[in-house]
Length: 244
Figure 1 (spheres, rainbow, N blue to C red):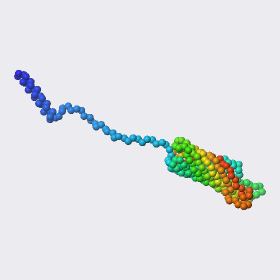
Figure 2 (cartoon, rainbow, N blue to C red; figure 1 turned 90 degrees about the vertical axis):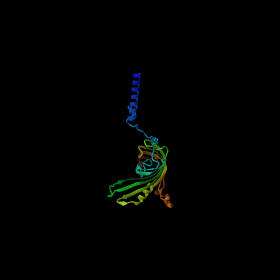
Figure 3 (tube, rainbow, N blue to C red; figure 1 turned 45 degrees about the vertical axis):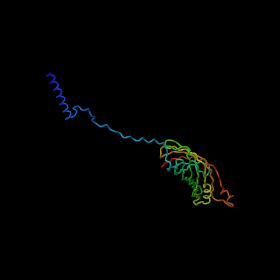
Figure 4 (tube, one colour; figure 1 turned 30 degrees about the vertical axis):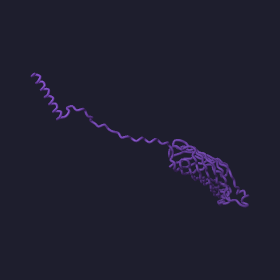
């Protein structure tokens, strides 16, 4: 009994000492805690859907063009190649309104053996374009688009003739009547958009021209120098356009 009593007393004493230590210092072996807080990530907004490539709905364009005239190439006052500057506005990515200006000046000089002063004739054209283009396919950078159009051309003649050192005004009037003309007709063209701001194109069509724009009355209508003529032209042009 004595040994049992001593053993029980020892167990009770150990239990009392353990309870007192836990109350004073806490758990001797606490569970491990993470050393670093886990990062939190806020929800990111969804990326916008990519937009289909295309030109701005409304913009301007400007650039040079080179015109080749395939009518009356053998005529005395026919124009074969004309350089122009063209500009306009691009509306709703569907329609172009354009203006153009160009000039071609040429001439000849003839020296006669029995005359000290040569015969000199200089003549040329001033061209003014006004027209519209309608997109058949949608323009997009890196692709070519097709268009149809209508074009009106006003051509003013330039002439200065000198014979034997004196100006020949009568000849100048005849030349101007042959050169002065107006034409209009349809266009068909294509432009390849290298980028948003640069395009290379070509166009052709058919134009009806009427020359001698002076009003003819009385005997003038029967005079050879005042005949009014109409003819067709098949134009071809190369275009380099900067879009802005």
